[in-house]
Length: 527
Image (tube, rainbow, N blue to C red; front, top):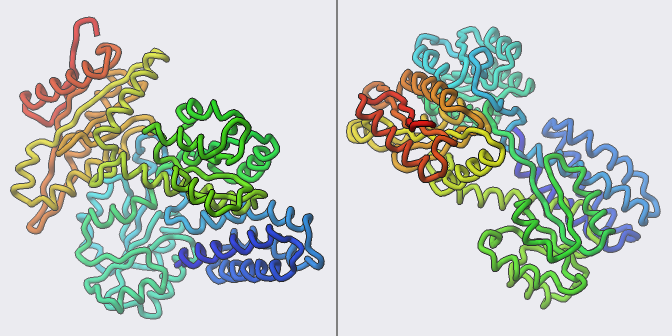
């Protein structure tokens, strides 16, 4: 199991050591301290079997081994290598794998595979029947060697292995082999004591299931492995009146995958560029002709839409009083010129990741992970404006779980929450990346279909409705199923957001009056 925390901490020791070299690149002691941190990172990469990180560090190790009389040339050479190393470190520290979800609805012949190794295959037959409804293929083997081979041949996303009372020599060998092949595995046992969990972790277990294994526990564990959504590139805006500084920023950041950079030299363009580009980080020159960065930051922070964007000052200012004053007025960090490429990359990525995380909390529903009501309405308005500009259809649907109060009253609110989460993930899996899925409130959900006719949206919703009705939800004494009803309205038949939402809401009530478990499209003469 990769020790991500130690890798992260070791890299964070490399960066300040390199900053010290930058301040005086002729000082051999500073180079020696930096070399020591790089050696620690390389040793850790070898210990953890991170061959990509080893390969990235090797040119740096060779360069450092040949440094006799260090100076500007050696400093520039190292500065070119560090951004790529950081990108590899970031990948190694990521909890999510690189497997990307498809942007189209799931096809039956392309379902991600989960392999179960257990001496009692009959005990998991219910799981086998349900996994397909959750978007997975599922194979069970009592012969562990055959199961492992099938997992390798069919590129399983995960293996679940029954370990009984512990990992004997044979099971430990299987576990180690699974890890060496790069497949995630989960331990399963009727016991869940600390010693057993510790043993599993030491052999690379990704998680631990207590028997009897439930469908919800299994799906929650393997979803991040199989259906990781592709993230949009980090967006970085740099404002500096020096073309040379902007060129050096571009040179440093263009080596980072999944990052988009925009540069401007005129402070009076910053507000409109922020609106248009929506950056995750703003790099702001502190001293510019006509104004300073502190004044620009104050103007930015006066606009509510930009009050939380991280601002990193680029400055040659070393006065602590000036820096504290700037931080009090909207600044998040300082980078002192000349700026180390490694320090620039590390700061930009860490600030962007934190901002994305905070923004995610503000727009997501805490239970389901879908967009919340406010964000969904904003995205619907965006889709309608884009549809109007490009003359494309947009459909809006509101879904309501049938008799959900009865579910909560009969099975309890904890089970009810699991039903809500199941519908949320089912919708996300079976809709396109271009579509918007949100939680309206309670047991109501909304879907915005972009560039889809009412007929296409109706067909997709009915397919989802039929599939969801086949999913069984577990409670203490057995299983049950739930259905949903939906109302659907289309633009341009309904010309604005309010009309569209009211029409879909009325169609939902029509679906309920029609007996529930159906989708009713709104109709308007001439629509």
